[in-house]
View (cartoon, one colour):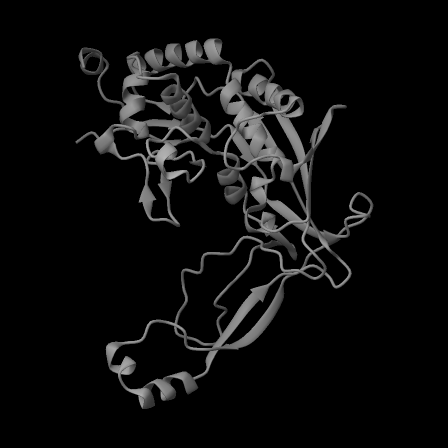
Length: 342
């Protein structure tokens, strides 16, 4: 605590992200000709008549006549849809990933003493660990195709091709052979890819630009799942779409943020990991998993980023190396982490 009081608060503190993915673009092809030809996938607008399936009010539950009247009401919806062509059985998703160095230098910091203390600690971490643990986990999430999200479920075959831009270095991974539940049994190819990622993060190379292509054999004419847009102004008009999918110049696409979330799903260090067996979660300051409505890193058990970072950055020792890995992973993620002046 003496060190914290001496250094004081830092009200302006920000870090730029060091893993920078592009949007992912989606194409349709066949497994046999996957390396030869692929056509951009287009969005299709559908108008459907749904049924009433939401929970009913108590008054309707006890009155069959009212229920029948409610069911007769049309539930009209206009939605976007995306699917492979009738002769296509394979989704091709392509994106690039830039890996940058400089995590030891905040992009903004208004406390010189804090900046000096953090920089020394971060450089010591880099010298000791060289980002090898984080880089291995990022490499696993590239190789196993986690970034495909729902498109990965039920695939017959999954191939991930990775190439270093402007260099004669590439890898091909069988994504179905690589676990998405843990980071054990890492093969030599993943270790090799991880070395290049670690060298970029630690500053041994200026940067790394990867070109990534995933081929997922789903089955002929199967649905594929681009990112869904957040509709803020839904209004009351029945003519408005209830589901809007993301596209870029007419090509179905996946948000770069969604790809980035998949790549940083490496946190197996949160307190409940062993007992819950839910697998890794995305690196977040409070371990938030929004679809479950749970924050696995609660300040009450002192496992959240801010509790650990305030100690780590001021030169205090953390309880384990895993806590250091987690803190540095959040900084690689980037964000604004200043303390309140109040």
